Image 1 (cartoon, helix red, strand yellow):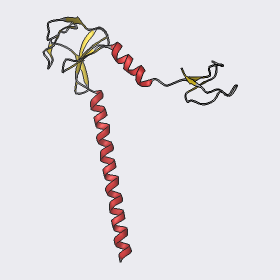
Image 2 (tube, helix red, strand yellow):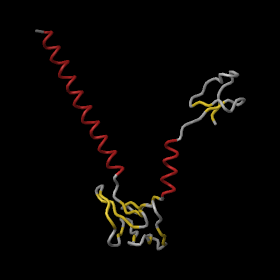
Image 3 (cartoon, rainbow, N blue to C red):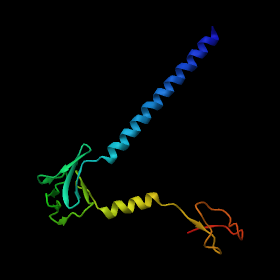
Image 4 (cartoon, rainbow, N blue to C red):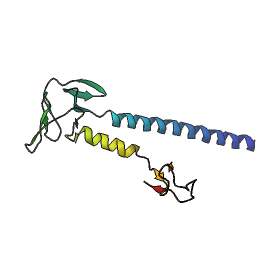
Length: 144
């Protein structure tokens, strides 16, 4: 009888843990998707586009962002301080008025994907992604 009670408790705990992990993983995936699909207006192939709820469509009227920035259908944006700028291909502006240029996004991607490279000071042809010793001379590989 006591063994049956212990077994029931263990199984209940196991299933509770499985359910918790399932829902927490699902929630984390949803948050990632929401982050990537942020509402914005953007210049794509020389045309202003609007992304709303993950769907992209041509921008057919001017938009006023949360911070007062105005974006026109030709890509001209007037900031809340009165300064003007013209959006270029790949530029996007969040609905809160924050500008993201293609150069900034490319730089973030490169930094994110950067991998440290190690090489031998005496034998530049010896390269590795982790530190260690050169197989030719035994010197420590140094970060490039």
